[in-house]
Image (cartoon, rainbow, N blue to C red; front, side, top):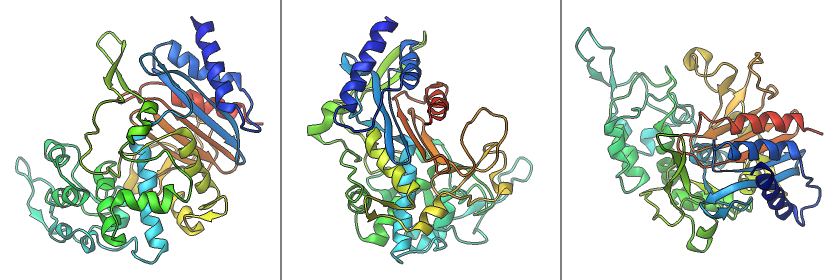
Length: 389
């Protein structure tokens, strides 16, 4: 079985690299992916690695849906890998001089003018609701420090909203968990940012991304709703049943249920498209002679933007930039990334990492509902460093 799986993986690699000058088969990276599939940890794996802008590995193994072999053109749900793209959209508007990071969110979403924060509880009694000491700003949203309501039934109900603005207005009605800028809570802030993009640009959020990011970067397979003529390349979404067996919980043919384009996790894409976005960031905002972001915008995205006292114990070796995590400390954790490396991951099994010092970019995708317990991503990243030329 292992030999058969590995043989099919090499076939996929051969198809993936046909006509792509400079890409060479790298058995160790394929072994990592095929072992994860063979062990039943993930249904499939798609990976891409480049060194100094040159793709050195591209391949896929497993089944994107039962009976359908995955390949490097398979489209997956990015989940939280959407967040760096949403942050880039805000920074484009900042580069254009249309908005500032310290603008109050209320300048774009009226409901935030009346937002309240709950004071610390007094014994058995809930604390009073009062106006915050300062407004929630765009910077607070980008850095997850605005204190927005977390995951709850009240927030769950907001997903029935018909637009980004309706979601943003709805979450503004819920009490802040803390004063803006005084705490870090990863979560719903990136669902408000699309409403700001739309208000500032006078364009729908999805149209702005297509016009200012996807088209300039030739990201032709990135969108919120997979077009009908590309759904044959769309993957299923898997989970595990009680005995640990893989099960399909969403098929490529299921209707899209998103009522609005989620800035925190709604995009679908391919490894090659996301690699182009990552390469643009590593190049300081430019790719193939087209500038998408200023160098200053990329610097801000890829450098720490939250005080450690506010971050608390969020991650041992990483700080938060704007839509990205940045390696700022080297501890004996087994993570091979250099200082100032950056990237992010998604709960459905997506990961990208950029190491400017090494010239290394890696992207690896699978589709498992809340897949953080599985080791494909860490093993792929570690092997990518081991195979550096």
